[in-house]
Image (cartoon, rainbow, N blue to C red; front, top):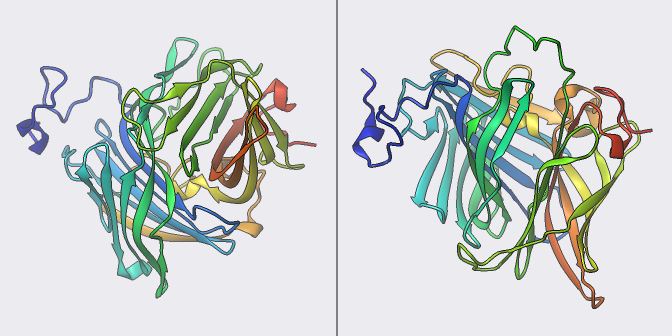
Length: 367
């Protein structure tokens, strides 16, 4: 029997029950959130994620708190039981209060000494990023869609008995769905074998009067195969955004790493945005590249685990430490000489060669 609660809603896309999502075993459907202080140089930040993998019959979730150079990660995984309308995994739950506007994150993990009640409210209508489709030879590596929305938060996070007020935090949430590598690695490599290469930058930024979004996926030569830059005025609706047709970027990479010391985005016409990293959140806390808690892996009917990281002690040359979101102070310099100040994240994942960055092999580091 494949009928689930979702079949009582008019959301079907094919003649099949909602439990089925085409025929690709790598189909996924995912929520992501981050939040941080709107001003200042502090490193306080939370992040959350929830994903379902219908053809693996797995759901997993994570919640993270970073402050004072320490990152606490709560991981949870369960069997999906084909029920996609249940937005909880153990102690972590997502609730859609008003679609495309308000959502709530709840964490209640007394054994791991982590709890949270956080409500997100969008600042403007979400943007839809261009569809991401990438093939390696004949094999589809990526084929997904993502909506992205900046917002403000109300609520609190409690870790080890200390409660932190996150009301007034700002940040970003996204929803993505489609195909990407999940679960156990495919044991059969491409023929002939293709060395891995993936270059990704994502910079959602919050300004008092609106939101700026930039992302790029580059090939090994630095040619963008998916790139967009958008300005969304505060309170804008579906068609209220401005796209920038001419956009480029530059990065100063920190010696001995693949993490940025400084970034600049040029929008043409004398508009430049600078990104100054203040702290780095490690995305493996949400399962990205995690050697144990990678997305879609089978941990049994239910498993929950806490992980503590001292960020200064991490070896940044390890593959699963490459992927970060840097908290950044942001300055937009306009053609008339005026400035717009804001805050955001500067997500970076640079694996394999990237000629503009000087990377020549899978894991060589900046000189």
